[in-house]
Image 1 (cartoon, rainbow, N blue to C red):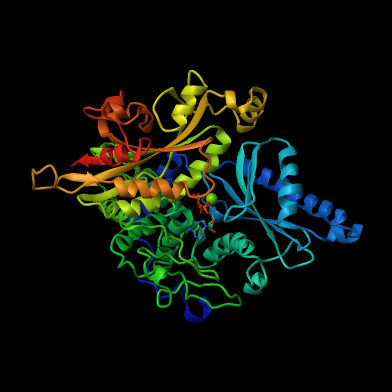
Image 2 (image 1 turned 135 degrees about the vertical axis):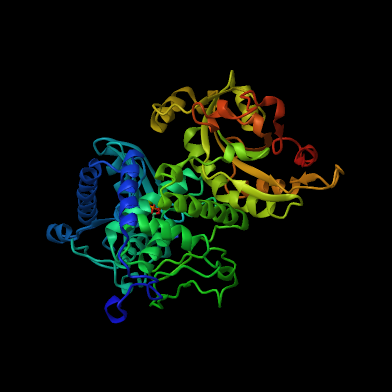
Length: 558
Ligand SMILES: Nc1ncnc2c1ncn2[C@@H]1O[C@H](COP(=O)(O)OP(=O)(O)OP(=O)(O)O)[C@@H](O)[C@H]1O
Ligand SMILES: [Mg+2]
């Protein structure tokens, strides 16, 4: 395709010029700054991946033999791992998961993956925190092996054996596959296609590292909450690389901010023309599907079947991201002019200083394991709360923070623990003890009997409330009534698999001065004028009290 047109992408480049001396200069200083910010990974990963690849082959062989295949056929059955996501793109940093897809021959099933492979991973040297999620949208095993955390996906293909040189590029490979398998292999297919559509991979990597770090520092990195996730940021940077194929990384970053802060959304960002293909599946098309037309910031995956990687973006998160892009563009102007340095681009967000009022959403669980799932559910539904809050009178911007804060609450007895689970305050709120692994905890709980536990595990999410400036002094007109959105949200999260003996949900209105100290970095809170760590005085319960009270309490005076 590139050869025919002479360029990559859906339009010709804006400029094929080489970067100027100044752009090269700022590229050098950008790389220095990224190294200072410690965004590069270590070498350990390759070794661990080699071990996982060998384990997958052994697993395929064992299952093949157990299913009656001959020794020769079992040996030939193969099995292969494909890394994808940020590791495969070459922009993986310390502490991020390695996304890995285990491709299997057809006779090795998803059940085998969880019944046979999962225990093999658990028994592997250095393996901790191995937990399978067979019924997830994309079924997977989460594992930490020798300190490297991985998401292992499972993809049995329609092939009797998986040779070492197998490629997933051909769309026909998707024929007659289960939808969840299509999703699993499409992670790899997307990353590989992305790399094929970029004129200069090293420039892309350097620029993307910069943009990812910036987005994390500005608290606008999370697909689940309605910002962009890793792959969506990667596609935006890839598009800029296509538009300026000969530019150095520093210049790509500059263009990224100028182009993206002015992008005429909802015009989609495409890396190539959308392809038709052999499956009866939906390909993104706003002319046909009203839900696709509703996407505010569509960034479309290039591989078949193309989809929108940003369908969680709401009016609010869109506004927050645009504000950050415009500010970023201004900082870049100064960097290019030499009046500012790169570190200025990576300064921390001001989310916990910015608003007078916040909502705190607390996912409460009786065990650490329950919390993993429950806080995941609450997190994935938060965007619905944001969507409903967008319609509240006087509320200009419900601004979600992209990450939850995990805490352990130690109670004096089981009764107090039960109260905390119901959303009432109490117990001593302490940081999670990272040393105490989920498995050790499960073993201890079994010994004591779950019931006797006096610890409760919570994840706290925050939404900042940007309130419209009001002329009126009339207290009725100045009310912010969030009762209905909050009641709807509570109902929604309790919708599936809610078990009130092990889980709870509470929502509170909290003032800036009452924010808990753990949302701040060391020294940060003291620097904030008027911030106090006490908290209790100004907290009001929104979701844990009886409905009538909840409605009343949900009204904040603006
Ligand atoms: N919203 C999405 N739409 C389409 N594919 C997605 C989406 N989110 C994730 N994926 C697939 O899963 C892969 C891994 O996703 P992930 O969110 O871990 O991104 P990443 O690029 O690895 O960034 P990070 O450094 O944050 O892990 C992506 O490369 C992509 O193939
Ligand atoms: Mg990843």
